[in-house]
Amino acid sequence: MQTAIRNPLRIAGAPAESLAEATAAFLSYSAAKNLSPRTLEYYRERLTGFAVFLGAGYPGLPPGEVTSAVVREFVTWTRERTSPATANHGLAVLRRMFAFLVAEGFLQKNPCATVSKLAEERRLLETFTKEQVRAILATCGRDFYGMRDRAILLTLLDTGLRASELCSLSLSDVDWTNQTFRVFGKGSRERSVPFGQAVRSALSSYLAKRGDADGPLFVNHYAEPLNRYRLRELVRRRSESAGIQGVRCSPHTFRHTCAVSFLRAGGDTFTLQRLLGHTSQAMTARYCESLSAEDVREQHRLHSPADALAPKAKTGRRRLR
Image (tube, rainbow, N blue to C red):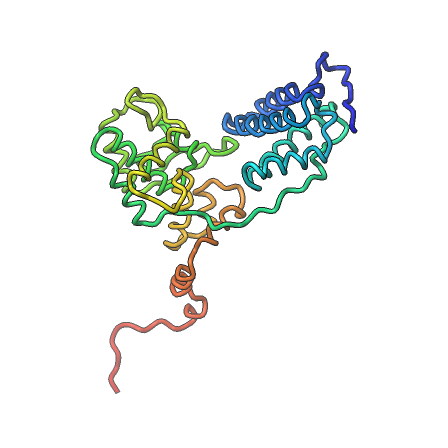
């Protein structure tokens, strides 16, 4: 059992004394690193889950007495109630918090250091078909919410924005000349995301109803900004009205649909990485797994390396023999 290290520069009630204090100190440290509100909320949610687990089986256990065995038990407890992926997310946040406590001198070692992630099943990413997208768009009428929702759905489809990214867009982020959005993604990283004519037309129709006042791009009738929870409900409601079944109806499914559609149309993974705001090719490569054998055959037909060696047919006059 590890013991907390007393730091003489700390006031009484050091973060190693209770999970609540450790969590508060870690979240304060994370906020000071200028992490996004969504990331801080994500950390808080995962650490609340750990607190619930400890309250049920180890009430009052301080961070200094958390062992690797306790962490493994928490991972198993989470997996049984959710999924291996969610359990791994909880483990990752715990590992960060305990690493912070060690770095700050509150603990001697990180109990998560020897705990391995759970194996996760690799499933194909869910996407909408063209027919399903058309059916969802068909539920949007010509009133304010119909025009707004159509603009939102087309923007999700055309740009692959994350829910939080779309909800944080303001009117000043729209560059009408170059047809791009200024987007702030994970880690507050800024990128420029292009949009097509269909989105431009839908946005123009929506803004004719909304007005060109400053502020958030997507709002309700009271000019209140859309949040990711309302956006998720919007997509679910429109999909339900369209009779969509057999696929998870969420903003992220539109993101997956955008990525796979981009690749099917001949787009490359490096451009897709920039478009989606991924920091590496690892996630972008997953979208390639969703391509069908027919998609691969069609792309090979268009870009066959061997066929490219064949001389091109000559044009112009040809002498008869």
